[in-house]
Length: 286
Image (cartoon, rainbow, N blue to C red; front, side, top):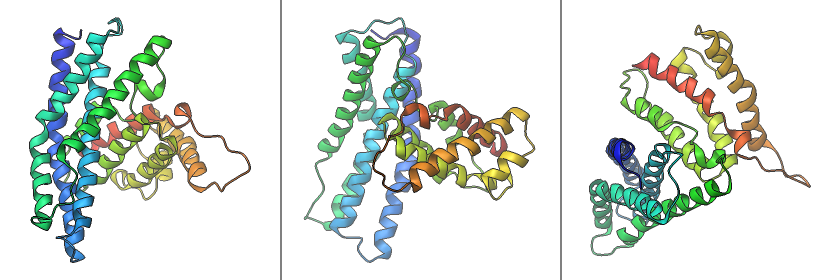
């Protein structure tokens, strides 16, 4: 069983992470409502469907990210057992359930778009989807761990360290809105955890295109070659520019061919260089 300090720290980190999700979820729902209000279709089943889809994705994200925190704090020496797997599933499920008040509020508001007519799926169904996803991820983790002493990259790490994400969320910059950057990081993690490697390549390229103004440059190539940072930083950025961008371009622009080879976790994993980039952004804007 997971207990003691690792369990205590995991619960604390999960609580902080889920607390931060409240604001981002609110902003996402408001964005959807604003779009449909502008189109004159606020009180519509389309608006309900869009909000339901967002809440479903949010519940899956809360479950998977919470599991990742527990996974990172899981002692390697702790043997797998049915009791441990059940405990981890229960910990994540309980944490997500405790984070539901804002989800319920957004769900109830969406139900009222159409008054007594409701096309929303049951909230319990949305919650259960997240439980099923994280349950499958936990089972897969232990199956793979039992088969190999070295866990595969897609299971053992996310592209963006959850702790780095927390640092980015804490940044309050009067000059730059980090909403899109945070969304890119979160979607990178979701895609990587779910082995959507072509999406990871595309999102990495999109992130590189998004951040140059923070460094006072118009393109990431200029950041890699001209930013007045440490030499180690420039080397990491040049690696991102030279390799990550090309990998992204290859999967964005290639046309259909007689034979294909799909990317794997190793090909798209630029996690260490991305962390150097994000750490510098935190340093500049804090």
